[in-house]
Length: 149
Image (cartoon, rainbow, N blue to C red; front, side):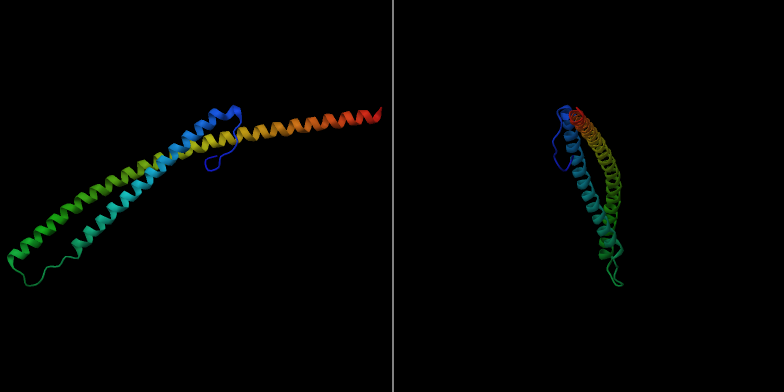
């Protein structure tokens, strides 16, 4: 039901409303997960950039003391940024795991309601088929009775 709208029987209108609410929640949590995944990727890219900056740093063989101190200070600051970014990455992983769990739960709830609606519709179709078969049997019996008189 989530992707295609179907006719809903009158007795299932309440359950269909629940399905619509569940669908909105599932969509919201999926969008939230996508945003969190993008933020996690951005933090990971920033961390990779900082780490590559640290590993690519070279100190010239001939340098002045002032240049050496400036380079050391810059590397220390980059090291602090690497530590902070690693903490952000760890936090982003936790947030991503939580968002994924929320989306999985919302998706499961939506699937359960949709399954229930499908089962109810199938039961109504089965009952309608039985009624039609019973009516056809009654008509055939009446016709046979007319023929035997």
